[in-house]
Amino acid sequence: MTNFNFQVTPAGFPKFEPSVAVNLLIPGIMVAVSVDTTTGVPMTGLYRSLDGGFSWSNTLLPLPPGFTGAEAPTVTYAFPSTFAVAVHVFPGASFGTTVVYVSTDNGATFTPPKIVAPGYGTYINNDETNITADTGQSSPYLGNLYLTYNHQFNVANSGNSTAFFQRSTDMGTTWNTPVLLSSESDQVERPEVAVSLTGIVYAAWVTVNPSYRYVIRRSLDGGVTFEPSVLVSNIVPVPTILPVPGYGFRVLTFASISTDRSIGPNTGAVYAVWQDYRQGYANIFMSKSIDNGVNWSAPVPITGAPAGTQNFFPSVDVDPLTGVVNIIYYSNQVNGFDLDVYVARSINGGATFTNTRITNTSFNPNGSNPTPVSLIGDYIDIVSVPPGGYIGIWTDTSPGTQTIFAGYSDIVIP
Image (cartoon, rainbow, N blue to C red; front, side, top):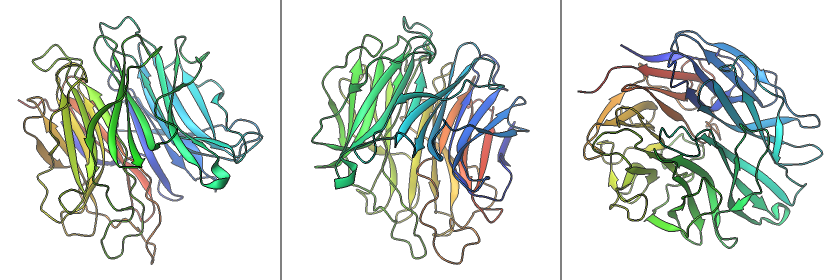
């Protein structure tokens, strides 16, 4: 069955930057998060479904004492009933701090926020968080939590940003010493981690200065050490504001990465996905590695969208049982202005993709605002619902304000 367009959160105060995770043992249990301004200030909204997305409870995760706002939340699932949420909180006794909440009862309750990467005034800001759990079925590091964030330093003087990594081997109770992934001379955007069937950790990020490029580093020991950087591809950056009259929202270029953890013909394949302007318009590109991240294929566009349209905010996830590749993205291809959400799916290891529009109605990114908005969030998300399904989640303005919507399918592609 499919339920391509349903509302997760009530309309009203803006909600954006959604992330979603699914219990692989009981796929009807889903937990999503977003920036939620219901109280008038940005908080972390927590949304939980026990029926495969048909109904959702809504609540807010508490801020640590002394902090006044939250943003950039992400959520992950770990066997058997754990969900972990990473968030950037600000400001307070420490500015720009990364915290983690953990639930061991399928999202019913969460621990208080644990400060993992503290910020320090205008010197250090830890933002653009990502959290991933090792669910590799043949991994010796099963259950490890991997946290990445954009470590911005010398913030007061327009300093630089580097990719940082931390791991927890006890479900978030303690966290190991941070690992610097990128060079301090490179400026990066939002690192992300994927884990293979056997526990290989792939950390990915986009370097934006001195040049745009997609970079990965690999760990063979559960995140203790990382091998040297590997270039996946150079990138032609998408304009920060897309060249469409009436658009004012920013579009940052982030890395998205996933691995094939199935036992199918593409087991071990790694898929790197990003938005790129090399065709003269924003499109979604993919590169694939079949040798555990050592070598990467030439990038190819995967949307089939008409030339001149704008396609952006991609996120990729590979089904751990079937190996189906699922990629979600925004596109204005219906009328050149309003946005829709599409999902590209591949059953042959990324050789070909079928693209499906999963929004019922195109929506104006500005909602009911008479002038262009400056932000619709910086990302959307998708996660596989085994075997062969998915749930995608995004910010929609159909109700007039930024509201979290989702689309679900459990149809296995033949």
